[in-house]
Amino acid sequence: MQTDAPDVPKTGVWADVVGQPDAVRTLFAAARAADRQQRGEPAPPGAMTHAWLFTGPPGSGRSVAARAFAAALQCTDSGQLGCGHCTACRTVLSGTHADVRVVVPEGLSISVAEMRALVQASARRPSTGHWRVVLIEDSDRLTEGAANALLKAVEEPPERTVFLLCAPSDHPEDVSVTIRSRCRVVQLRTPLSRSIAEVLAERDGVEPQLAEWAASVCGGHIGRARRLATDEQARERRESVLRIPLGLGRFSGVFTAADGLVKLAETEAVAANEDRDEAEKEELRTAMGAGGTGKGTAAATRGANAALKELEKRQKSRTTRSQRDALDLALVDLAGFYRDVLVVRSGADVALNHPDFARSVATAAQEWTSESTLRRLEAVLRCREALGQNVKPIIAVEALIAALHRG
Image (tube, rainbow, N blue to C red):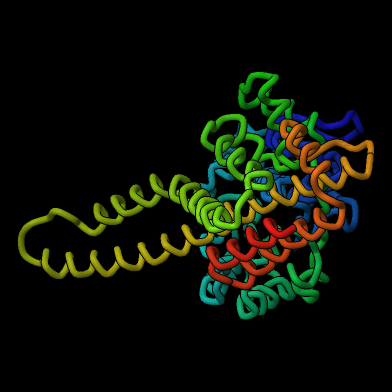
């Protein structure tokens, strides 16, 4: 799945890093240098450093590349770092390695309290592995206080600690300049459709024709391609979104369409979290002795209820984030539709974002002017910006649909 360039491993943990040969080459060289350092052998200067920033568009595999690198750093097979078979590699990928802490923000931001606890843990020496690795997905969600707490650790890192940060870009809006300046940046690119189709067919067992379709409509987002290829409901939700542009006949339909779009996002968020939420609640009840009898059970029950309320609060925050993410994904699909209309009107010889909706795109290109199409596209982008500023989803989407109707 990678190119045939030298020194680019294609097996083990690296096989999951799709379409990123340059990044894999850099990370593998760093892991090899780190391994030599551990064994007291000379290593190329500058190949390994204590802080890394993985950037790239959504779906490019930032966190996948970071996890693969973390596994390679802990790998016990010096002949094939990142072998994918040793205990260290398997526990890193499963999230159970004692010396690898992965932070996946479940709410809309990463709090300063969470980051301070993480920084304290990062100062300890590794217990079983070669390094203590701190991997922060979506580090652009750090609050200002959390970023400041992290900065101190990155400025004065413990000797055997490595920080791996993931963000959409190295722009100051995503990662502060002070943190970025202390990291080595690994830039990932949008994977080619061919590479995505190959990994869906070979690794996930998706039928080749379905894999090619999912790869062609996912916008270079590997995770999205996998969902579309394996989840019929995800395909149905996408079709519902892409029927909106040509389905806005009467103005009365604006509110129906807006409500439907928001409910689609809510449904996807619930579907993504429902089983996990219930499993967490049941695990907490068991840990707190639910159903017990005898002396002291009343106090235990009160403690369990308080813990359950705190868990439900975190789960609500996670669901809110999932809803925002699902709605944003729908808006990206809409933006892609209007982009396709502009492509057809201009006669440009480039691939469409939604080739399976080529007929609808052609119809819209005949009915709309380039100016009205561009206004619609700008309305979608304004809606994304409004949601980023915590405008209530239904209000932002109603304003969007009204703008799409006016053209």
